[in-house]
Amino acid sequence: MRIKQSRLRLPVAAAALGTAALVAVAPAAAHGHHGHHHQKRRARAHAVYVSPNGAATKRDNSCRHAKYDSIQAAVEAAPLGGVVVVCRGTYHEMVTVDRRLTLLGQRGATIDATGNPYGVGVSASYSRVIGLTVENASPLDPSHGKLADGIVTIGLGPNGPVAADHVTILRNAVSGNLGSGIDLNSTSHSVAIGNRANANGVGINVADDLGKPSSHNVVGFNIANRNFGGCGIALADHSGAGVTDNLVYRNVANGNGLSTPTAPDASAGSGVILATAIPNGVVTGNTVTRNRFSGNGHGGVVVHAHAPGDDLSGTVISRNSIGENNVRTDENDLQTTGIYLGSLSPQTITVSGNQIHDDYYGIFASGPVTVVQKHNRFHHVRQTLGTFPTF
Image (cartoon, rainbow, N blue to C red; front, side):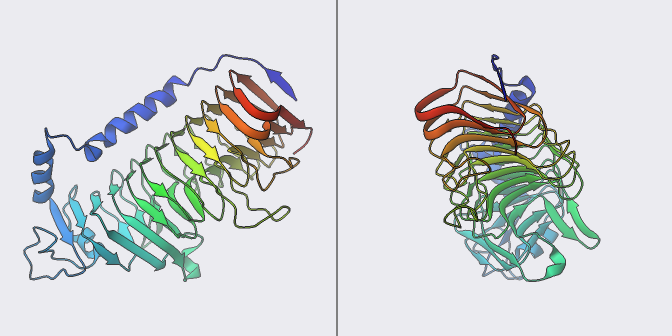
């Protein structure tokens, strides 16, 4: 175990990525007076409406006069680049966004995906999913594989799963989904911003299950708490395609991975994890900054590199606020820990400017990990750095 001191500078590319993504979604989130009425008129001109009381004989110019009672039917009827307004009510269905559009939920619009592999699956790039409540994805058909997500950047088509890029997932609430609340899977240049992903298997997932990279995505300003099956936020290479150059920024992820009480059967739940379990896995260039983590089963921020040749280079963990974590312990670490770094192969991880408090270990490194750290602050921490030779 080696310690090397270095000045941290947040990568320019990651910072630019975050700014660009936030600017891109700003019009959808804006509520300013200038342009608000213009946007509203434009949305109406290109909108179709879906309501539990929808009927084909209605004018389709408002929720009261909605023409559709099925979200999927409204998606198929919407013009390219149009808006599907989902009115208040509960919809028992699975929705596949297979054409470029905006799926816009009004207050109280809920998709109950019980028995389905997802609530909303997006297979059309440049689509947006905004303001929905999506819950209870739990597929009964084994042919759907392992999908059990609230909102996912994959849609099931006639020839199998199709992934989309440049997807915006904004201000949704996802809960009770047995897989991930939000799954940025095999996607690039997509964003998940301002969502609440609580009480799912995993809160927000970034992965490459279709053998297509997940890169240059932004996970920002989300709340991912009490996800029972695993982590609040996960960046994981499962196929070898790679999970690279993503930004995890200003999220809150507390109390995750607590579905089992104690070690050795502890739930593997951290605030955010960067991980791969396949040989030569690639999880590189990712930045985790300005988040808040506490009360998680594993560390607030965790690296797990389980196989030979795994590459987690370029990982930056900076300026996070991290309280008591690792309450269910981790490999070779039986104490509470703020940041846990475990690897079978040599890694160099930058850890700088974090505030870590109320843990036994501030940072724990298991295996051949070089920690590049500076300006971390520790309060009520028994040992700032703990090490173990193997992982």
